Length: 455
Image 1 (tube, rainbow, N blue to C red):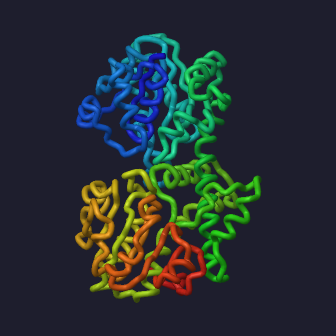
Image 2: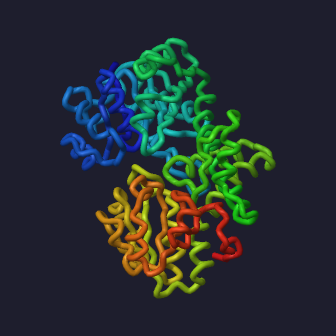
Image 3: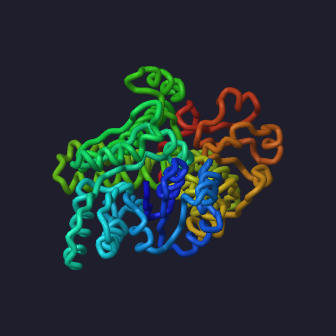
């Protein structure tokens, strides 16, 4: 099939590369000229396992092309995927400016019938809005042309987006037209040769499915983090609790890993957006409280490591220096959006502390975007041990695999104090203490009164 993907980022590029790998011709459109120029030379702008070779293969086989030209993309496509960003607005609702801008351009330039699929995460009713915009633009041109706007939400997690495209857990398509549903089924069939995971439903059902899925996963994270807080008070180990309840098949163990909180481009934004449009829809406050609590717990959870540091070292941190392993919101990505590490750094540096940070992928983003105005942060790109020397403690903010097996004797010699604050529960508390470390994790029975620390 002939595919067009508009918006070549964390969603659009893996989507396009995967479709090309299945033999489809894919035109990738983005208005960022620098990004497109780089992609034409094979330079992949995001870190995602398996993506670079997939993009290179698509380019080499002539199935993957990159452009800034709407007309070229629309003229050479049967199905258009809208994969632009939908960042949260001031009130938490999804900002649809970019989606609507794409709809206007499609309406102004389309010359043949198209299937237009909302791949971006958008509120219920967005497909109707996109359809109305395109229809208005066609009317302004005095053109009567058939087109379909459908919902096809993405279910790709950063750090495994290629795998999630190549081996999808489910494909959801919202359309009221059986023929369009069958076309989309054929498009996705190569990804589901062993098991059909295609779910056709109404457009609004599909739009709400995406928000419901992400909010449910965020809820599981906030739930286990709340239990971690209780475990701190009860002297129990949240890892044992999670294992115990996760063995129940009705619950499952996915997303029951206590941590310093979730971040990224999806969960924070989607929980805010679901809460915002649920409130506008008139959902009773009793229901809304559940959605608000998910975000509230997560916002607090990002402060747990700073609270523990302050409880251990005192509120005045001038002259203290801490090493931080992990800047990205999760492993295998350079994405720092809503990262817990940003909160850690902000809370500690505003109290006078210095931070020496290491991350295998996210140093550039930290320097140029998220922490560029914080002069109390230094960076190391290559050697995670180098930043430990003379530091009062080590903080761990990301579950990157290279942090899991470390030379503890070397770390102990380099650190001023053998203290680790682990926001990802990477190590066994008993083993760490036996090795001579003060070890503070999440919900594992730490003897530190952090819950009374005021920020």
